[in-house]
Image 1 (cartoon, rainbow, N blue to C red):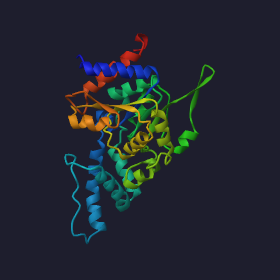
Image 2: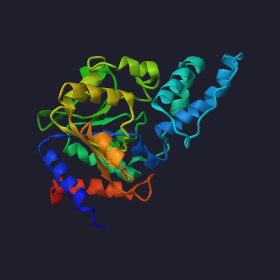
Image 3: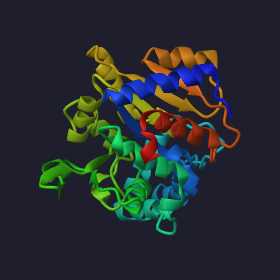
Image 4: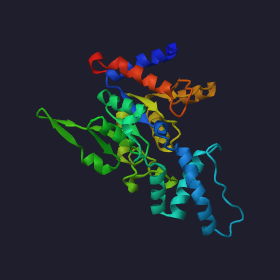
Length: 303
């Protein structure tokens, strides 16, 4: 199916950036919808359902009761953070981690069967890093299934233990997958509630945020399955704008952007690319876009 002329121009532009080593990929929860894992909003609503009876027991004298939102309800960023924070303090850290592990459990999923993740693995030959805000390990397991060496960077200690493989007498660093908000296998690394995000409000507050800023300055960013609603990345984006080093980003919108969407995002140098997907859970149009992009930068012998 032919792509719209404006999308073809975007593909040519991105291919040029990749050839110069000037593109970083940021992957969000939308990518994990291929595996039927919940979106961040759906996960927060599930936490809210568990939180409601716990709140009633913890605050029996309250005049009004918290009503858990449904995934169809509008939910502000403040509500996202408040629910996560309240769950942690009312239900306990251990119960929170156990609930998240169940919500994002992907152990029954063969990552090699996920077409989007297979495409993302192929980008490792062309970009310096992939960043993700996802808790699940689908991306890592997709790399493993493809036989591609990688390293997870989820905590400061990972930056001190950079991993290399010896190939033909040379030490080659493994491809980095940066987990901006931590990994389920390391509960202490998870960024979930308001206090977690407050601790990340500073360019020098977390070394992985510093690395992200270092990687994107002077480059461009491709947002895959990412809504750009995350407070941590938005805060970093604002600081980069204040420093006059804000990168250009390309937001893959599955539907159609309004004029307000376009104008609002352009202030942050974010260009929306409307894919007009028929199925937002498993958008074939997204696969086609990434396939076309890889086709522009991959020699025929390696496709």
